[in-house]
Length: 65
Image 1 (spheres, rainbow, N blue to C red):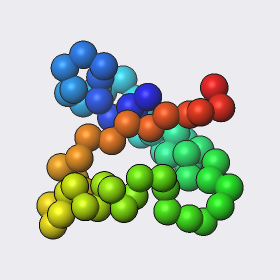
Image 2: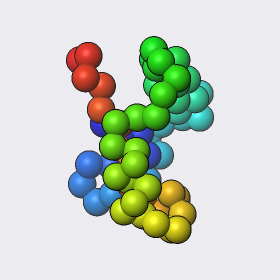
Image 3: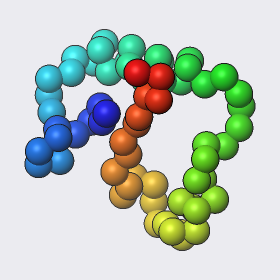
């Protein structure tokens, strides 16, 4: 699931209101059970090198659903 991009073209979708976006982000942050780096973090850091994380397209997946 991507909160910021539509599934087709990758453009921002204005369908989310600010309150819905904040609620979704809060839910994702609150669902973490342990304070640890996510799986694949070291691989990601090697791949991007010194580039900004803002250039990465992030997709979030809920394994519980």
